[in-house]
Image 1 (tube, chains in turn red, yellow):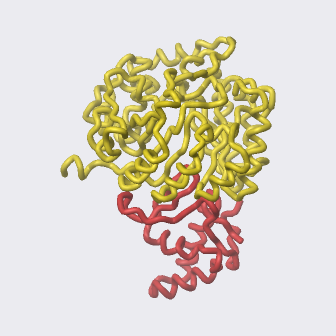
Image 2 (cartoon, rainbow over the protein chains, first blue to last red):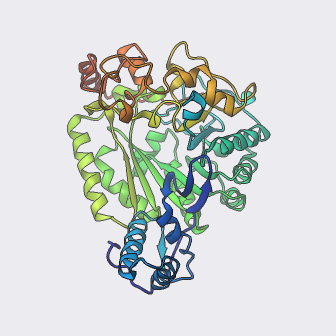
Length: 96
Length: 360
C-alpha cells in the first residue's frame, strides 16, 4: 500500500498514458487515463500541474503555500499527500 | 432551458474499425450480421469522425473491432486520433499485430493498449478463442507493449469455463506487467446471447468470483487496478447501461452507422444515421435512435416513478427488448420488473454443448 508512505522527497509525475487536459465542453481540467476519465477540481489542478517529476512533494507544498498565502502549510501538506497518495494507488501518478 | 443547452457532452467514442477478426470467441459482442470489408469506412472518414467527436467533447477513442490490426491503415487512424486531440486506446486480441506494427502505432501517438486474454491456461484459452496458438501470441504481444513503455490493460471475459481461475488470471495480468485488469463477466448480447447456455455460470460460481475480486483488490492495492463488470443475470438492480442512453458515449460501426451502444441494432424500429450522410454532431443531437431513450420521458412504470431513474436509467434497453419483449420496459434484471423471474429461468438453462463460434 502506498497511501501514508508518501515521503517529502518523493517526486510525483504523470506516468505515460495519463494526461492532464483542459476541455471546454466537459467544463474544465480532466485527467485522462487508460479507459478512465477524472475531473480535476481547482485544487487538484493546482497540485497536478506541478507533478512533473521535477518538484518533490515538499517543494510542491512550499510553492502552493506561497501561491495561496493564508492557507496553513500543514493543511496544504495534508491535501497534497492525500491527493497524491490516492492517485498513486489508482496508478494515475508515479513516485520517483 | 432549451433541449440543445441540456444536451450532455459525450466522453467516449467506440470506433469499430472492422468486424474482421482471426478469433472466434463465442461471447463476441459484435452483431450476428457482420459488416463486410468492402463497406468499411476509410481512414480519411475516420479522421473526420474523430475531429467531429473532439468538437462534441469526446476525450477518448477506443479503437476496436473485430480486430483493429486487421486494418492495414491502422497507423494512419491512430495518427488521426492524436491529431484530433483524442486519447487513443487500442482494444486488440493481440493476434495479427507484429512488434514492428505496434512500434509504429506507439510512434503515431497511441496512448494505451488493452489485450484480451481468454484464460490463464493455454489449452483452455486457445479453445475459447477458437484459435490454436492465440495464448502464446497474446503473451508475446503483451511483453512488447510493456517493453515499449505503453500502459497495458488485460481484459478477461469471465464465463463458466474459466470462472474458477479469476485469481490466476489476475496473477497473470500482474506477471505480464499490466497496470490494470478488467474482469468482465459475459454480457448476453450478439454471439454471447447465442451461446448463453454454454457460457452461463451458476449463481454460486458468480458469488465466489465476486468475493475473490474484492479480496484481490485489497491484496493488490496500489499494484494493479482491478475493474469488474458484474454479471447481471444474478443481480437485483440493473446496470446503468452505457451510463445512460445518448448521454456519455457513441459507437460507430465499421460501415459508419452510429449507435448509442454496440448492441442497439437488436431493437426493432430504431433509425440509425450514418457518418457518410450526417455529421457526428447532427447524429448526437437529433438522430432518431439517440433521441429514442435519451432522458427519462420514454419511461413506463415501474421506472417512471422510481427514485433510481436518474442513476440507472432503467437499465439496458436492449435487454428489456430481448427478455421482456419491449425496449421501453424496465430492464428485467431489476427486481421491480414484472419480468424479473424470467431472468432467473434463463440463467438456469445451462448446457455443456460445443460453442457456436463467432464466424463471418
